[in-house]
Length: 162
Image (tube, rainbow, N blue to C red; front, side, top):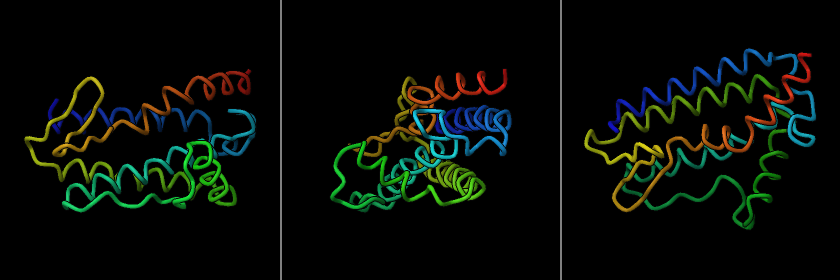
């Protein structure tokens, strides 16, 4: 897979994501119960929280810098602890702020990938970028969405639309 193909794939995934968000509508973004008691806003903030880390790691690797510290406190060790911190850090923020973060982070990811060397090694099957011995899943946001949240969101959406 080339860098250009990866960028095209990410842009198509983003278009599909935006279509889903439009279908949900701003007025339903804070309704709880999508995944346990989380709302769409909570899920989007959760995805964003992990995306921040991915982008920082890619940017540091491109600059030849060591692995950056996590955006969450270092004492948090498990995914559940990190997810709880992300939830608490974002629950008072508005839907618009969360969605603006998503857009900003996606643009940062595209810029980071655009800045990759043209001969960068990319695993087409998993959209994994290799920078030396370091590997980064460029599809982390969308893969996590598809694997862990999409079914819940679509089931919830079908229920609220019926």
